[in-house]
Amino acid sequence: MTFFEFFAQNRADVLDATVEHAVLVLEGLGLAVLIGLPVAVLTYRTGYPRAAVLGVAGLLLTIPSYALFGLLITPLGLGNGPSIVALTLYALLPVLRNAIVGLREVDPAVTESARAMGMGRLRVLTTVELPLAWPVVLAGLRVATQLLLSIAAIAAAVNGPGLGNLILDGLATAGTPFAVYLTLEGAAGIVVLAVLFELLFAAVNRLTTPRGLGA
Amino acid sequence: MPEMTQSDTPQQTPGERTMIRLDKLTKRYPGQPGAAVEELTLDIPAGSIVVFVGPSGCGKTTTMKLINRLIEPTSGRIHLDGQDVTRIPVHQLRRRIGYAIQQGGLFPHRTVADNIATVPKMLGWDRARITARVDELLEMVGLDPEAYRGRRPGQLSGGQQQRVGVARALAGDPQVMLMDEPFGAIDPLNREALQNEFLRIQARLHKTIVFVTHDIDEAVKMGDRIALFGDGGRVLQYDTPERLLADPADRAVAEFIGAGAAVRRLSLARIGSLAVPGPPVVERAADAQARAAALARAAESGEEYVLVVDEDRRPVAWLATAGARRPGEGPAAGEEVPLLTPMGPGHTLFDALDHMLSSNASAVAVVDGDGRYRGVLGMDAVRTLINSQALHTADGSKLQEV
Ligand SMILES: Nc1ncnc2c1ncn2[C@@H]1O[C@H](COP(=O)(O)OP(=O)(O)OP(=O)(O)O)[C@@H](O)[C@H]1O
Ligand SMILES: [Mg+2]
Image (tube, rainbow over all chains, first blue to last red; front, side, top):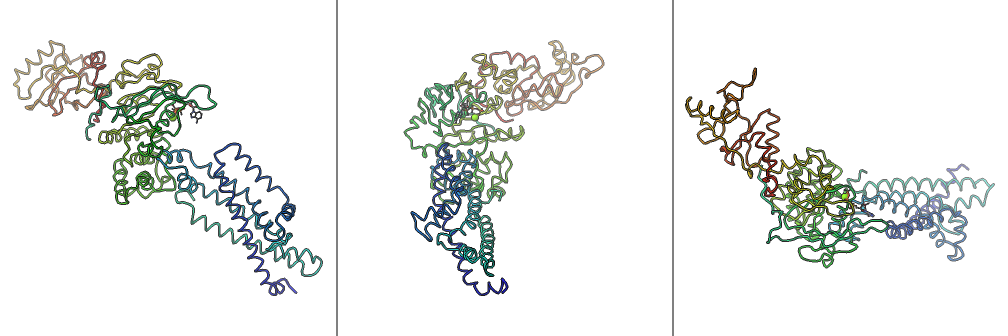
């Protein structure tokens, strides 16, 4: 049986796993944004807290993924829970770092002018700083997404969803003729998703970068 | 070009209202050894331009930011139109104070029109009024609204960005404008154009303006009063440009003003307000005998030329006397020499001197506002005027555009 004959047989499973994989990544990313963006906003002007936050996020990224997923089983059980949380933790660094860098790169003369015209802190943030930082923030989301797409494959190890299950099945049946095919399907699905997300980010970047920001 | 109307006289007159009062203002930045501004007390009269000038790091920007509370003082008080600024909600205070800075500080992601509309929008103006205001301001700062209102700051030159910055600061019609080197980093020609335009605008609007620069020439040109800062945010002298140049309070002031003070003062002395010697003239219609008599009289009193005027007493030409002839050159006695542009009341001694030097003439004709003969300024007369008390007590009104 060739790879393509094999794929024709189980393509419904592959499609399901791909969708699950994408959803899992988006959930992890979304949670990372919900946490990372406010933390960035609260700390980007500070000295020590900003360094501390970036340090912690950086440390999280160095924990081997198998270990992190495994450690999360104790508090969160198996399945979706630990998978989403683990991905969130991994996405934190790129999300946080880019948001902080983007906000800090906004020309101080611009924010000072905004304040001098009587804009409140929140208005400066939402109408000046975040729009100006947005391209950098978005670049962080893109990097985080690519990172999560590959790490999400580990979720299968804790009974999580996604393409990792195909790869895990392949590993479990190593030596049999179809093991390679399964692994290949899982990997190819991730690559296809990566390409799709890249296109999506390029489109979002084009549509949402304020004109005049040299994009 | 329209004439500058005279702004409030900088000398303290009894009825003059103080718009901004700085009262023993001190600002110490944490971790800095000295104070950036120390015990600064200064009254800024309503409707006038007060220039802060001084070396880099002497606290000019700091003082300005204290006024609109971008930074808070360590001690001391600021009163705006009689009201303690700390009693005014900070957003409200800032909407009453326009702020323009050297870097422009324009929002790069907004159009020129949106930038200018920032304060009017916050003040809740309706759209029609905002649109009209934006176009009015663009025209005021010399930018065609059609061409520029839809552009982004990135599509403007540095000078155009500064113009938009000034327009944006004026948009909410604030009583007070704070301008921190608003025309810095522009080539001299454009800078001069912007200065003139701004003085023209101010002649109409009569805002109270604090203007920061470290260029003494700009200070002299723009200021009704100049506060010369020394290190540590102390004001070394607070005076009219005329008095600052003529009578520096101490060595530090004199050093900052530099060697060119005498020449700068010339550009403050308008001929219209000076006593100009008025030697006899010859009517164009006069017959040969009368001419000869006039020439003889002039030659006797050492004049080289006699001015010829027409029926309306407008100067038309010079007549050379015997004294104008030097061996081998110069016109013969009785020869007519063409007249170059006479000096009007709005011209300054600087213009007169410049004119004489550049046209190699020994004197210039001086006329009144209607172009009629008033007198003749020669090198000697200019020198006398420079040394006379007249310059020191010049009325202090701003330069006219000529
Ligand atoms: N945010 C700050 N923190 C600490 N020190 C500051 C701060 N801002 C200004 N200073 C210091 O305060 C002093 C006055 O600075 P300021 O910016 O008011 O000077 P300036 O007169 O505007 O100078 P320039 O002509 O160069 O603009 C300087 O010695 C400067 O180093
Ligand atoms: Mg400054």
